[in-house]
Image (cartoon, rainbow, N blue to C red; front, side):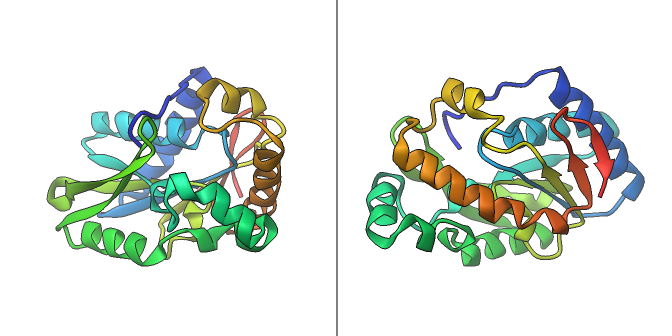
Length: 211
């Protein structure tokens, strides 16, 4: 997302290095890593650290933030959720999975690919074209990222929105009000249901372990 604020700390660096070692040992071509977790848990920070760290191993990795792929425009999403019922619509069904699948396939085939990119400043959706011919790996991050089919390594961050409230306020993505708390609780239920899909778990202290 354009205008996103990354709060990279020592814990992200340490966890990222542990995951990098696992990736290097796997040594797969056109590899896909997915990172899921609740809002503010550090998904984007971890994806950034891993992608940067892999450069020293000669691996060009590109983060793919699938929170860019909501079907409903950012300026319309609040009213859409309220009118359709937060409990009914908040979850993986809000994503444009067809476009996600097309962009992932383009990566696998080493082609140019165009996808959405949300500008957090203007709250508009831009189109971003990426040439995947020189990209060795994509690191998919987002609430429901590990639902992407055929991912080679699924990472799940166990922090919940209860522990990440401070990060959410600092990053200022959305105001903390009753509506937002209801959304976070529904996302909590949906994201935690994905934990069983993980290969790697990152606990509350950001320690990395195999699932």
